Image (cartoon, rainbow, N blue to C red; front, side, top):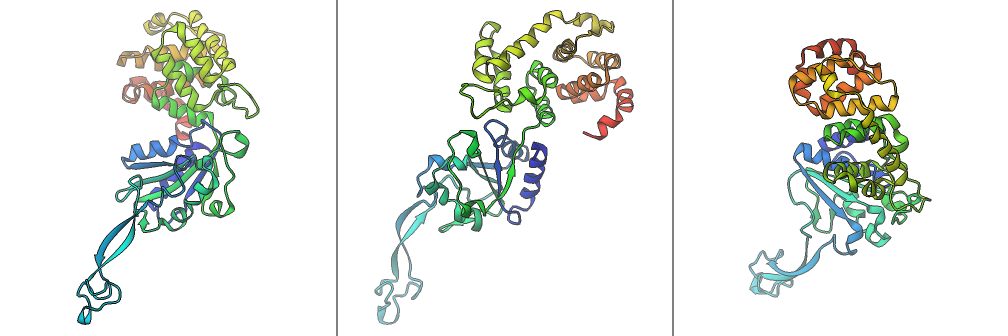
Length: 356
């Protein structure tokens, strides 16, 4: 299932958490299984309780027993007739062992109770999730009504630290295979303001380099949606002399080599100043077009520059017309949509607007 449909499913489940059975998101490392519920909780301003079963002992979720005194339920604290109650011995108080719930579990409010990396926990730890996923309770603890329960984990074929899930636990979930998708990721990346050169590069190269994880490979690093986010931080924070080696260790040597080659196209980009000044220079090379669009957007600051780039977009091939304005919207939606030429752009590209 594509990320945007996973998101819709979780959103619907949150509106009625008790009526929708828990979801389990399956997928390889780094594709966003954990990111989607985390972002939903942040946007809704609700709690995400992230529990990693692999870090717990089998008894941790149940809590620990404590010796407490309580009013005798039989004689109601009176000690009974002639103070001879068989439960409390006439004292009115009986001593019992009561389980103290762990502080990690929510007691009120709304949110998601998320068992992340559940398949990384050995079977005995996984078994402690049986009751809470089906009955919304464990021992004396009950999951608050406002919390939705879900989990995520890697497949056995991913060569991650994964244990088989028992049929009893599997039957307590609705299972979804989480799929990476270049279009969904690019929309998210634009909204998150990832480095525009990465957006332009992956728009050009597509899913092949968005995710090139191969379980049988011995490479230490590989490209995933998550590692491209790390790569954006590297480009934004480290000087050029360090970037290549850091990228090799983040997205893998192959993806890093192609990306740095793409970055070198920046040297061949037509004068950005001339384009902002009104010249309609359009390079012929496909990769150079992507690099130019990225560079133009990264230099766009003032309202008149947004207006100029929307005008310039009419000189580009259709796919670049749409790409340029999409990136402008992600950079500053107000300046883009209030530019005088945006209305004309919208009329010419209404089919694109209707399908997104």
